[in-house]
Length: 113
Length: 137
Image 1 (cartoon, one colour):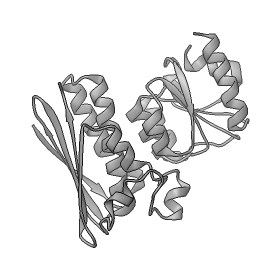
Image 2 (cartoon, rainbow over the protein chains, first blue to last red; image 1 turned 120 degrees about the vertical axis):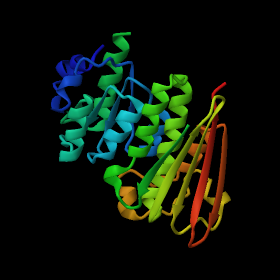
Image 3 (tube, rainbow over the protein chains, first blue to last red; image 1 turned 90 degrees about the horizontal axis):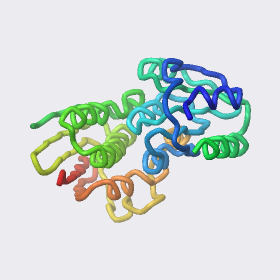
């Protein structure tokens, strides 16, 4: 399963980092607390959050996450989008809330395993 | 090998950049990925603490054949009660910092979990030094 697959299956908007759509996804983590993600998310995870500032990219880069998915139609701030393009870690956006989106991601990622 | 990075207090747009540099160096040295992951988590948390609480700080990295020793020292308010600060959920972060998703009181516990040894010394109104040691063996 790659990032492009979840974009297509869930109709996600690609806000930035399009060059990373072939990154492999092995799981996911949903949280808005940065230290929680830092301590518990893992490499190749998609991260579901409502945080849109640049620090989400610092975390995605340090943890080597597959992609970030913003909920409720949120868009990344300009400097976050810029770093996402530079590092090739996509920031995606969904109109759905975290609960629904996480449920769907969980299902399709586990089906692919 | 020794490296030194500066950390700017209050500048969240640069938070994580020192940790990111150290990660690159550890990768170049072919350090075990599991040890890199643990080290990166602990360094990021220590770096964010300087950004969120202090005026300025340094990250001093000493990589030896058997261990990585990192000292993060800052000029800042210091920690009056280190045992209290180590408790999961305890935080003195401002509301603005919490709104960004920081300040959940998980930083120091994260450092402890992701290091083989962690030492904190602090003087109120002077600053704090956090030493993180991870063994390579």
